[in-house]
Length: 409
Ligand code: ASP
Ligand code: MG
Image 1 (cartoon, rainbow, N blue to C red):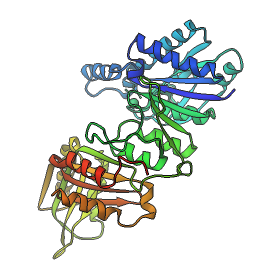
Image 2 (cartoon, rainbow, N blue to C red):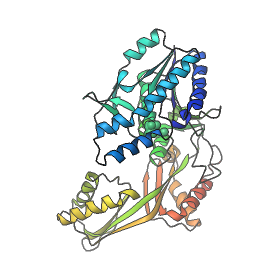
Image 3 (spheres, rainbow, N blue to C red):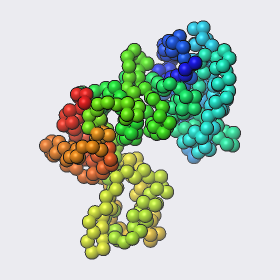
Image 4 (cartoon, protein in one colour):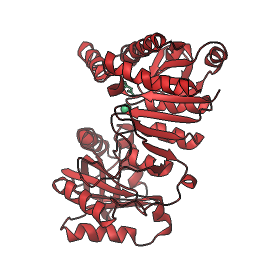
């Protein structure tokens, strides 16, 4: 029998009525002749509540117990979904991560899937079982402890199961009906895409379009899992995330992504010598600062300014790492300047590989609106700029217009 993976996010299993509704979507696929692997999230809000309980009990918590608590929301929805399906006359069974088993690393709270044992489920599918309802987000460490895959990790569970079981497709049901050219709350003209290439989705996911966990897109790209993002609230096709070969026509730019809460930090007057970048970014990495953009300014008389961006909530950590490095004598700077009023806006599209002048068009569109650019970075399929946060909406809208994203290519 062909196999299908169907993943339901928190809002799709938010209460018993929603579970009944989504069970109906599963039944429809069973009736079409699929063996279905359902991956469920916890009811919406549940994981946050569990995380809160852990923090309130122990600030410096033991990560193994964090996982024991935080993974539990998915157990509830897996059991309830299975019960609901049984009532519809379907042979369904729930599976927790350890029962499958989903083998992961022992990095509690952010574990990576290493291998999925397929034998248990496969033999049940050969018997009576029509649907396996798997608790997403969970795994089993080499030490036999429950692990979790990081927030939003059920997406990754779903893609990993689709790859391991050779599913025809992995449908990710959520509360939006697909991937948009940008956030419709920011630009009213945002358009739903029929298809998007893995690489583009990867950029959009990591640039702050929060529909899919980034790791899940990486896995889908590696194993060529066809991924569909669609709504469990409305019955219509979603967006297919697929290989670029499957996409015949597309715009040069596919989407505009943004990250609101960025900070720009500048080390003023550091010695310009071999090893200085390593001496700065080594301690930042060790302190867990996610440095994004980096610019080293022109040097004069052996001194230079080094600018980098990071999430705003890491500014304190970054400052401390730099002050510590300065006291230890490994770097020397005149001052550390933190600008917490910036945001990042990016245009993404595989079409950029074969089109010149896309960055220029972006800069011109921003200039026409009087938006000043503070930092620029580019890659093969992306151009990102750092701007004042107060211009974020304006910048996103004007780029959406400049590249005519409201029209399909
Ligand atoms: N329930 C987990 C979370 O909220 C995992 C997921 O839903 O993907 O992060
Ligand atoms: Mg999610």
